[in-house]
Length: 177
Image (tube, rainbow, N blue to C red; front, side):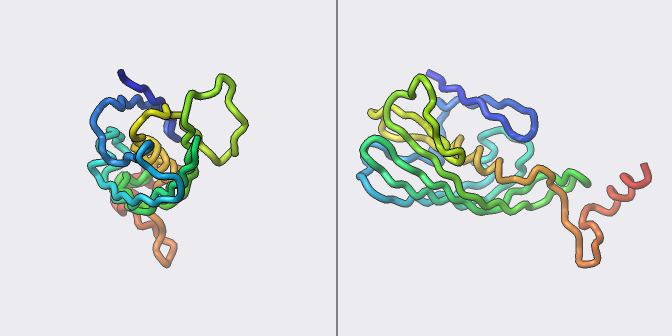
């Protein structure tokens, strides 16, 4: 059976992912994980981002750390990541490397989701999973978090003299038209 996950990013695009496809990038054990604190480290690269078919991310290399604290009926996951993504400059259309770094809190609750959502911390995302599941795939959550760390406007910076580092030919064309 397919699980559909609808995502909305800063650009008005809805994307549907089918999680039945094989992705072994970021899986956390559920049942076999002992209570207490655990750390899992992952690295994702261009192949990870190409799985999601987002043309905005050309290349990427991101280091991910998941700090997990498991309790009887839930676990808290702190997602920390840092790395670099190559995207297209909004001004000159050349490739630009953008550093990304952030931290998110995810709460994984075991059991069925309540009919009425509980009041959660505004900085906390909650996922409900079946208590019998062996593992959880966090690839979509990690991907979404990394994309949200990208700035809205992606342009080359300026040099020490205040001149743009964008492609000068393109800048000349923009200014003359």
